[in-house]
Image 1 (spheres, rainbow, N blue to C red):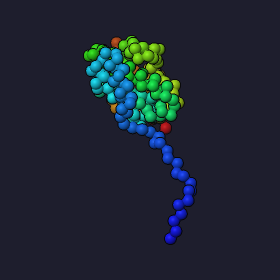
Image 2 (cartoon, rainbow, N blue to C red):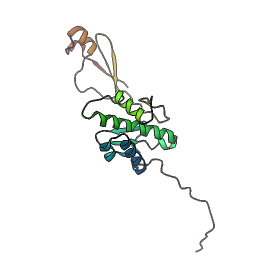
Image 3 (cartoon, rainbow, N blue to C red):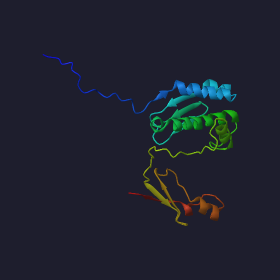
Length: 187
C-alpha cells in the first residue's frame, strides 16, 4: 500500500449559498440606530436574522416581535442593497414603535417619516432586485352570470360567493343568489 502526498487537485471550499439565523453585527447596528432615534424599548428587543427560506422577498419586519428578516441572496447582489433593505425593514419597526397602539398603514406616512430619519428619504414600497418572482398557477375561474366579470384564483372558493358590484348595484350590497359566481376549473 502506497500513499502519495503530492499536491493534487484542490477541493474548492464554497461558502454556503444561504445563511440562516441571527446576525449579531446587523442586530447591533439596528440597536444603535434605534437608540439614536430615542427608542430604547425597540433598541432593547430588535433582532436581525437571515432567512434562507425567502426567495422573492427581499426582507420582512415582524411586529411586535421586533424582528427584521433579510434574504441571504441580498449578499450576492450588493452591500448597498442589503443596507437599503435593512433600513427599509427597520423603518417598519420604528414606525410601529412610535405609533404605539394606533393602527398604521405598512407604507404610510409614519413609515415614510421613519425612512427619512434612517437616511433613506423617498424609499419605495417594492423592489426591483434580481430575485426570482413567484407565480402561482391559477386553477379556478369564476364569472358573474350578470355582468360577466371574471375572477381567477389559485384555491377553490369554499363558500358561496357573489359578484359584489352586481349585489351593490341591484340589491343594495346584500348577497343575492342571482349574482352567485359560476365556477369553472382551468385545466
